[in-house]
Image 1 (cartoon, rainbow, N blue to C red):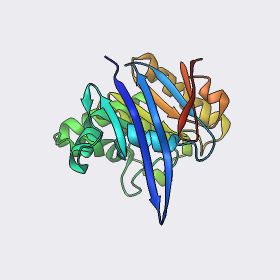
Image 2: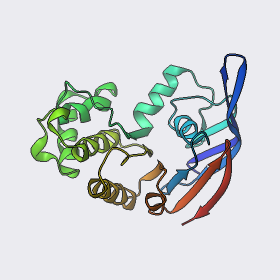
Image 3: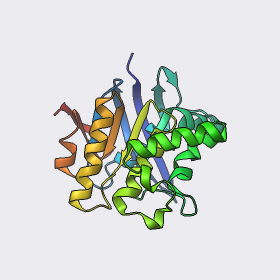
Length: 226
């Protein structure tokens, strides 16, 4: 059974009197352990697709099965529970909490899972060291470089041991050298068996994935192995 199954998925937004079809009849399977890149021009639906895969949005019609469970029309509380336990997110803008240290930012998903403070701190320290920030654990985001902030975001994404890591332009705010470091880290995570889904506009970055899906006008234009 595929880890992710999309069946005739549609997403429509109402903007005043006009309806915008962001996704149209999308059918897609992703197996556990795959590394998938999603590309497409602005307005093609790639961010909408990632938001639905990440349970941040719901389809207008069709079905989304995650690990065999149909999550298409779950309420917000149920979707929040799935996000906290099964999904990890890496955003272009990092989305770190400025007032918290590296360790405390990594601990946030564990807090919502109800882990004890001691267990959460131990797990956060392990992850900080894994991404090369063991010696920066007490620093706040403002004291870190862009690459270090993205490493914190990756460690936070791993805190709940997710089924899937979803990355939205993860190197978009980084210089090329730092971006390559982050991509190497994502490659390493994939080699450990993580399922990775990444939205990117960069052909070279997409080439690192095993599989490339191109969207156009809300439809899958092509789906091929790299």
